Image (cartoon, one colour):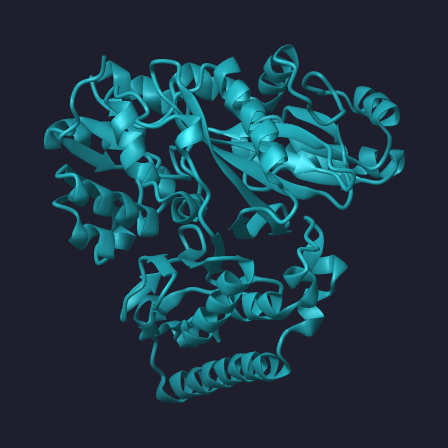
Length: 498
């Protein structure tokens, strides 16, 4: 039986750190933040009850420094650590370190994380539990000849995927054997660079598929529940951009059937706390299990809006040994919710990263609108961390009301000083194919969404780029003439970007 949690160290930053701090404040739990050199003025530092410096800007020396984080947690008297998502949230060694230091890890056990983090182990467990998986290799493949044999049996096209991958990394598409042989070494190298391991597996590439996931919660008493589905099919390079619930293609009967499979999958790995069972759905309506994400998802607010539940509070309750306070039949889906990930990337220029100071921003609000963000006038969008700056959510009584509210909120949402994905989402909200629910993981290319983006916005983006280059050239000439030497640290962001 776990002890009562009275204080939580949040091993993260940005909007998710703020999200957890807010939940802690609502239930009277002391929140403890950590921050790197880059985040000294970050808003999560100001909002937490206490904040401690964790290290330099580089994640490896700060937000990924397990020993230092444990040291801070012990010094601050933290009962528990919440990892958020990203960083240490799926590192199986971290829960073990927490346990050894008598600190509750708000998430799955190290054992469950080891299985879910190894896609081949997880696939083997699911097959034993009679959960349908995508055709492909049953184990890790280290030899290109074996990969070619499996691909021939499964049928091209196939995906080469890292057994330890995530976030779209370590994935390569091969349309024939020649391409498979070319991509095998590249996929191995990419996997090794991203995860420290080059283990690959082969999986049949299902075309015109939808990515549909089910939110899970499971307690230490063996009770598991699914909190309905989220449609996550609009992606770029295997990374989600827009999520919604309910899915346009999941009816009540399918929801119950696949939800039960998701709960069974969680039980098969003895899962604990919040997680997500992810599936691919083909055009014929077949669902294939692909993995369990052993953490709170970026898109968890979508589920919160349609269920009325607070997933972070639920995580904390489960972590301190409480029984899930509702039965499956108690849950009802209310309305529709859509989330757009507002990334600091330029959709007009191949999603180039965009960083720097945000001199001003206007956050939308109104009926059905929720914004999870760390932005404020004068904040810094750093190049050291993930490009996600905000999550914009809209709830409506049905899909169309949610979509219209989202479209209006996107018009109101302004972020100065950086480029964001907002123009892309405006185009998608107006796209007839999106409105009809014609979604698939190749949606952006299939319907040529980038070609449809607003012409005026394109021209403005191009003019900003030209202006930045011109300003940089003029500044360079000025420095030459003045004979001055100015360090990069003292230059403004717009000069550096130019």
